[in-house]
Every structure is written in C-alpha cells, then in structure tokens.
Length: 239
Image 1 (cartoon, rainbow, N blue to C red):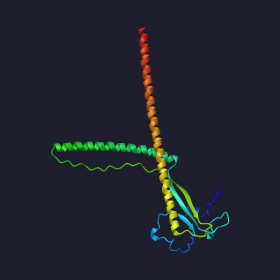
Image 2: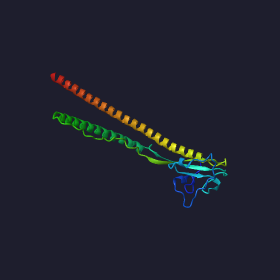
Image 3: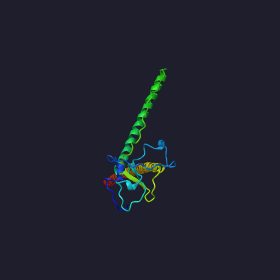
Image 4: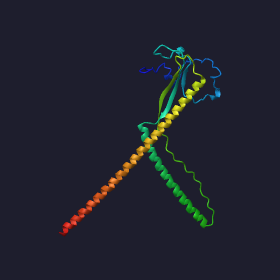
C-alpha cells in the first residue's frame, strides 16, 4: 500500500465514514462454530462504524494492486476529538484566567455572605431570638472543556492469504481495541494540552514578575539619580 492512493468513491475503506450506497447489502458471513459465537447481549451498540467483508474476492468495491488472495477484510473507523492545535491552546489559557477570576469573585461573595450571616446571628442572639441560617448552594466553577475538532482514521485488518474469516470474538476484540485507542488518544492529547497550557501560564507569570521588577529597579534608579542631582545642585549653590 506504500505509495498507493485509494479513491474516495467506491472504496470500502473510505465508506466507513459514509452511509452505504442504496441497495448495497453486506455479504452474509459463513455459519460459525460454537467456539466463534458470541452472545447477542455482548454486542455493544456503541461499537465504532466498521465494514466487514467475509470474502474479498466477492466484493466488487475492493481494489487489488496485486493478485487477489483469499481471506476477509475489516475496516474500523477511528474518529476522535483532537485538541492539539493553537486555537485550542489560546482558548484554554483564556478560559483558565476567566475561571480563576470567577472563582475569586465567588470566594469574595461567599466571604461577604458569611460575614453578613454572622452579623445577623449576633443581632438575633442579642435580641433573644432564634437565628436560622439561610441555605445557599454555591455552584462549582469548572473550566470549560477544551475546544476540539474531529479527526478521522481507519484501522484495517485482514486475513489475506489465510483463506479464513475472522470470528465474532476476533471482530469484537478489534472493535474494543479501536474504542480503547480513541479514548487513549483523547486522554493523551488533553494531558499534553494541559501541560502546554500551564507552561504558557507559568512563562507569562514570570514575564510579568520580571517586568514589574525591571520597572521597580528603573524607578529606583530614576529616584536615586534625582537625589544625586539635587545634592549636586545644593553643593554647587553653596559654592
């Protein structure tokens, strides 16, 4: 397949991203023995989209670059939400600072509410009245999910040259692996983006600290120069 190009029209592999053509019916798989059967309740409705060809020589949509070999073919869609791109990083940093501001505002609001409750409690107790604290449920402020866009890949398996069909158990295992790969990709990219986000935030914070220090040093230098100039002028006046 190295250096080969698959056409988007009439391709079994590409068709995992598209609805089946009108009138197309997947070839029935040969009867399975008891060892290859899986229970109907074990089949997941959340399995990724896939195309299974029990006999590649009987599928007109398949393209062969060499002499066809007997066997089956399985193409599984790998669609996942990717967040590793510049726009997502910039948005994540903005969301981080926005979330921090909202959390600080909420903390201040909670503090003011508790102080007010304490004053009302003391006033009620001083008047000999019973104080009932008001119940306020403060929402948990979380950062929004990362901005993502969909990426599409295909996992392909075959038994070409072996003249056998994948069992239902083997197909189920392949679909489970595909789902696991998608979850791992999304998790690893989210972790990588979080690392990049915190690194960028740390760098920005240090840059601001350095800028503040440089400004303070500059102001000290100006003040020192002004004092020295004033002292020189006073000395010159005495002469």
